Image (cartoon, rainbow, N blue to C red; front, side):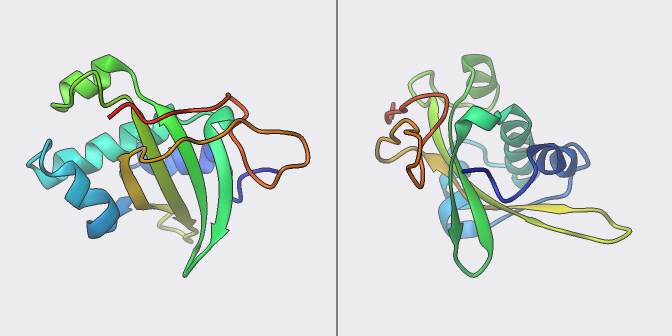
Amino acid sequence: MAPRFDLERVQEAARNGQVEMTRGRALDHLTPFIPLLEECYAFAAEVACLLKAGDYYESLAQQDLCDVYGVELPVELLDRYGFGDDCRTWYVKLTLREGGLAGDSLFFISLHALEKPMEAYVPGAPRGRRAGSLSPSW
């Protein structure tokens, strides 16, 4: 069980500012806290750069193949973007659109509060967080 997209390539796209997001399950969840769109994109890029291999949960085949992560964000980051320290656990679903000369583009399908627990990885299971279980904090 491994992510479809190499995490270093995901983070490189984020560092290069090549970030896009859906409205319904990403931007609409961020704008009540972060009113400026460019700051929403900056927040998403920072979240991508904080992802670790152990945060990976599963890959899904939807319109695009995507990787799902559950992550607990640092309070400092949350404070900087107007979230309370009770908003620590997040659901992240992303895909990497591989590019030619322009480079890869990171596309967030979901970036919002973790809504249900993510279980820990069990060898042989089709999904699970290697970093252990994660529960909603919101």
